[in-house]
Length: 116
Image (cartoon, rainbow, N blue to C red; front, side):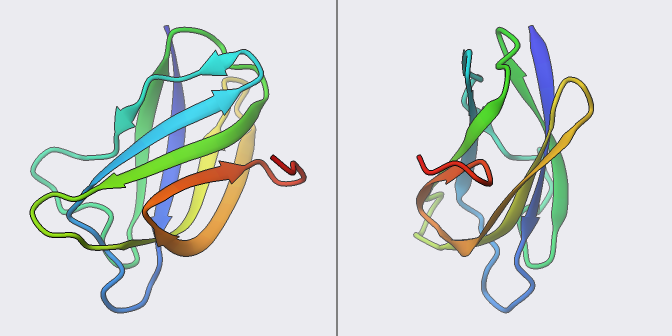
């Protein structure tokens, strides 16, 4: 079992945070991580201007990270989340930046320079 660090930022404009469930899966050359809920228990995370760090477990080293898959599922009412960026810290300590800059419903974010 290995753990990747993922740093997620929410945009800094009104009404862009979310109370919905947000899930993250890392997709790499050797497979996928576990689907992980981005939530800090009893905290209001993923709100306007927030920058949060989460642990994403994987059963194996994923090799080069190709995509970040984000899924947003409503909690009580549908709201939309404006994700500014996702940074994946690899096992070797390299930071991979995945800029998004859009409202999120279900997103596949390719690594910079990849056309998938």
